[in-house]
Image (cartoon, rainbow, N blue to C red; front, side, top):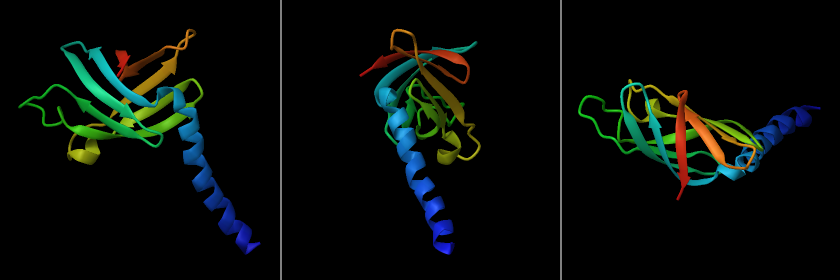
Length: 125
């Protein structure tokens, strides 16, 4: 009985990341992303891996130290046709806010998405 209590959590810890990686498969790769907020246009390079990835906004700003930094991507939820991620700015610079990216496959199999609610234009490299 004690062995079962140890094995089940271990099995789940191993299986869950593998399931996320399998579900994220259509989104894995390097992407150029563009989006427009109420104030400005932005560009970034996003590389999605089976277990996370990186995001780097092309814009640099003396007024905002969070811009232009490469930050890790955390996979939050993955299905066969969607991937929700967090851009972990707070892991790189204290005081920076994390952002969310949500990717979906449309009815034609194209990847579409949003960054913190703003539509992304995506192009695979």
